[in-house]
Length: 175
Image (tube, rainbow, N blue to C red; front, side):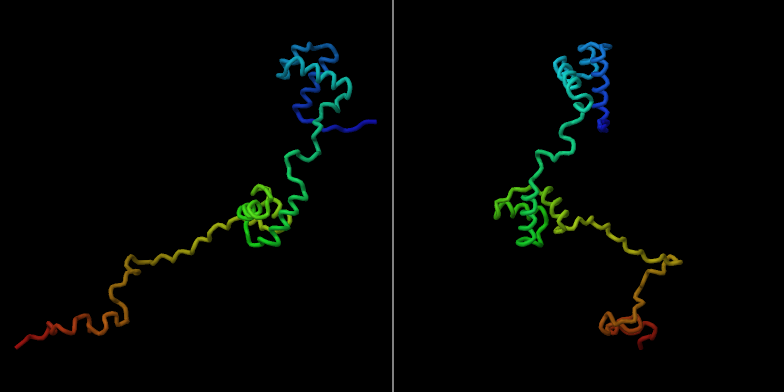
């Protein structure tokens, strides 16, 4: 019966060195130097190879959940509390309130990931601000300047024909 075992490059390197050691073409000291480990660890690896074969070099934790991850029940409970009591809270504030009021200690990143997974929090990226369109350039230099060309009565009737009403017209001689 042949089974396929997935090994990393580091595990494959250990396996080849230990195979050479088992065949007698390499000493324990040379194997230890080659792998960068102690003689005792080399003896332990040789025993593992003799008992389990190449399967013994695969990590025993592969495919198993991490020991540090939060229980799924606790994540579900935290998300349910957030959904019921704090539906408009973000993950950071919700994590603070869960610790303060519900006595549920959960990190912000874990709560954020759980809220995204359960559809409570939208993992939206911040949109780039849309650049306003600039006005088209005018063909002549002075086109954008406005020197009292307005038709509006800005000065409440104090000026007429670009001259103040209180001053006499300069073109008529006074006699």
